Length: 323
Length: 257
Image 1 (cartoon, rainbow over the protein chains, first blue to last red):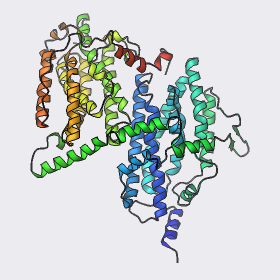
Image 2 (tube, rainbow over the protein chains, first blue to last red):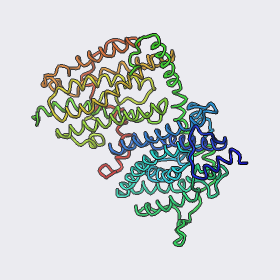
Image 3 (cartoon, rainbow over the protein chains, first blue to last red):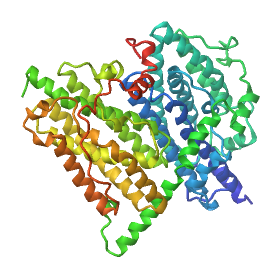
Image 4 (tube, each protein chain N blue to C red):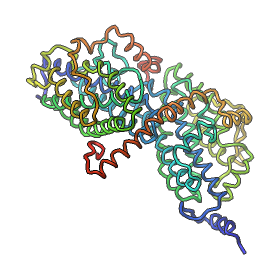
């Protein structure tokens, strides 16, 4: 007779979707938490490299757009963490715990957000390439067997495509600019290309990624995603008159497959697992400033809410609290 | 008033430049709080508000552009320090969370009073800009009132941070009520509510009521500011702020970005 776990696997492999209140194997729940928690935290940590450029954005329009983009990313983080909170309920873990995890090194975030973004062009290239890469990954996740994740990603992918267009617009302006602007752009592409090769993960997927494929949490391999990215972005970058820092980059005309120089897998992997990138400590420091440093403000909100609930019970006016 | 006379245009600029610059600076400083608010929900709210403020500044710079001043982008990125007329409070460096809450609450109360007075000036582009701003400011005021109230009833430590922040910001408030030029500017419109003493009194009335409701100590009435409070000609602080804000633009000031 088929076990409950086997029946569940058969169900998701036949294309059925899972809802939050459905029974699910612990392994499935834990894989979802791992994936969505990391995704949510990466959205939040992704705000830090770009926020460095908000104060210095070169026009009013760029400043407002970058501000709005970072706001979207924080919003994505908030929505995804709500999903992770729902899934973590059986473990008694809520938002505070999930946010503590990043400071305690218990959840990883994307390699790209550990790196330096030393020029305005980096802010543009992050939108162009990192958000562009994220769209490819997330479009694949739209078909996830976990229905709440797929539904939420519809909105996220739509917003990411605005971000990519914002990044593309910044990049196009630099490419059409002065020699100094063009040099700034080339420098940023040189920095971000190897990171983007790592972004999709190793050629051979790890055990938990393979298990996510079995469960249809994800539907494509790392290499399929990377090939899609190169196929989309290599011609676009070349059309900008900017070179890609990889002499081995070449497309096989027969198969359409791209060959490329492997990124330094060990270094990037070490950066992600040990928060050891050139800017990891600074950015985690800012997250700590907000989360640990202002814990008192979140506690104050709870205490004030209790105060006004008590007043309401006694029929005392709560002033603006009712607004 | 369809086309203002030269004299009226000069008077309008004296009134609108301080407001445009205040909105820009408070939005610019607000954007520094991105990803640093106490929780993600507050981060989203704060970011919206900062974008609104910079959008309002842009709207007002466009009104000024219609009166012969530079375009919005030029006003922000190319204007010399001697041309800025913001109040120091709006541009002050990022401090504590409680200080930001107090700063923003005080600014919203003041700004509502200023907008209400300015709406009596019959210059259609200004009236239209103020009406648009009004709709968004109603939410901003409510938001910051509720944040002050939360800190007031958030326990002893929270209340202490709030009271320290009020003491810190109080001496910086009088600048808000000054204009960037001579009194003739507002006197000629016969809008008495634009007098610094009137705006200060209206502000004190609102804040005194709120503080009483929240059982906060009234720190004392505000003194009049220096008449040149909004002039920053030799301010090293403003020079440093502009340098940072224009760091990228100065690479190619007239190029596309």
